[in-house]
Image (tube, rainbow, N blue to C red; front, side, top):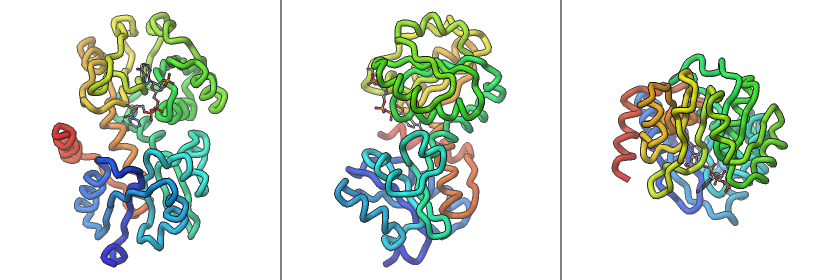
Length: 279
Ligand code: NAP
């Protein structure tokens, strides 16, 4: 088989959805002159265990995992601390013959913040909106980085309590209505909900209430410049966008599969931006 000749990784999902991961990894393979591949593999839920447990005989040195397989992939592999804490695996690789898993959304979020807003971690209070899967990675990253207090607002309070109980740390669940009172002391505001994405409602938040030193991060990247980020920039606040997180989360997988740490260049960002503009 063609794919056995080169090191190859893939994205496992169902159904096979459009993804920017092949574009990102092919760019890095070209740039680093590595004879490798990255494909999208549509694997139905009933075929997941066989596919993951025999990943190498399918021709792959590792994989990304996406909806709806992230939780089951965790159970089929040996997760690291991050994947276990987040409760979902998005990256699989072999380590001495053992199939390992991690969750690179944690470092994707944190490394993007470091790149866009150095010193952001000086804040005592972070305010996170949303308590879904992406929020678990964000909140875990903030705790791991030593942020003192994480205020977590979600439409469904029970889900936010579940997240806080699971992750430990000083995570304070607050009702959505309390966001307005927390803004004046939030040094970091993070939107992990899909609000502001094309086709969704906008977030209704008065950024004028944030301190002048605050940093605003949005996980949404369609559109690239969400209304939340535009409003933050108009106020002169530093921002970190969802595309930055997407690019930063891809770095570790590439390094684990192909042995070299790739760079996020302006050229790569422009390539993915152009692709986002098409869809
Ligand atoms: P998820 O598990 O479905 O969680 C969605 C969260 O948003 C939940 O807290 C949900 O609240 C809340 N929410 C949804 N619709 C809402 C509404 N109309 N009003 C208020 N709250 C609402 O999704 P996810 O996997 O965490 O993804 C969330 C977003 O992050 C998506 O836009 C995704 O594309 C983005 N993301 C980006 C990256 C990146 O690399 N940039 C990585 C991962 C995810 P309830 O609990 O009340 O339902």
